[in-house]
Image (spheres, helix red, strand yellow):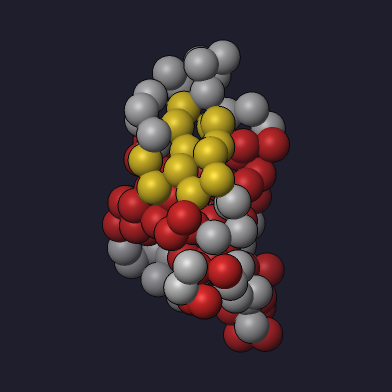
Length: 105
């Protein structure tokens, strides 16, 4: 296995943490909605879902990094909105789909 595949996604640095901390609850809800809208009933790579969701608001959240979106995916999985396969700490090596129990599906 390639050593790069063994590493988790990096944590947010101080600047990115500050940007994420400036988000309002409405901002976070909008990001979550974009992540759910980018997800499908079939499995999709987390990196793809994150990329599509980031394009939903290209001007509003340009300082919010992909790692934050990946963290929100983990929350959406824990809340039952999405199902996951693989290690969600590695967005390139994990997949999500809409939960079969979720009203979004």
